[in-house]
Image (cartoon, rainbow over all chains, first blue to last red; front, side, top):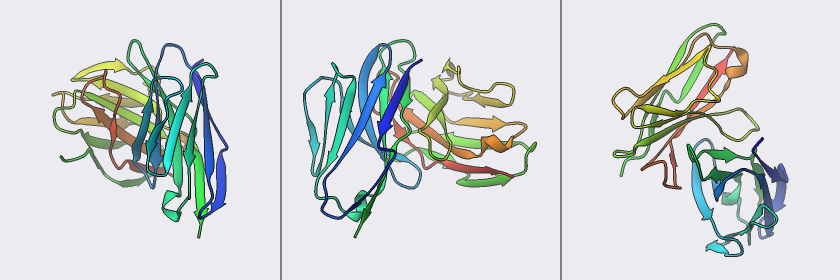
Length: 112
Length: 114
């Protein structure tokens, strides 16, 4: 069965800390891995990764994919209270319906 | 560009009642998704449409859930009759086409079944 597993499930840090969120997957016909930030309800897109070893960066956020280890990490440096959210990892399949399979998410809380 | 619209935003019903959710995707987007997100879990795909055709409904509980996208634009998802375990946020998302990686989510509908 295809699955995406995220760890940790939740995390509490203080402003200025650096955090690393993990995503591992067992999915047939891998196409891409996506990270989303979910505040309140609607997930918003952060990164899409398709090639192993190439880091994507956006400000204080960065992510990298390791296709050999079937995993990805999302790093957030100098965390701010506005980074408090659920971070979702999704893997997209490369066949048939091109379905997205989501992990359970990591709930991050940043304290002032 | 207007985003994905959903209504209602919140709904409280009693078990065995019926409920319907509406979604209007971004203009021009051919692919529409309905997800169910139970508290503490990631979104689970219920049904995927390509224009007005169903591409994947393998995880849709067809004994009580139904969805349609008759004109290939907006869509409705119905639950009849609702069970307690249907309490969740129902998210609608759309993408330009199913080969495109980026999907855009609507604000969701939070359903509480009492």
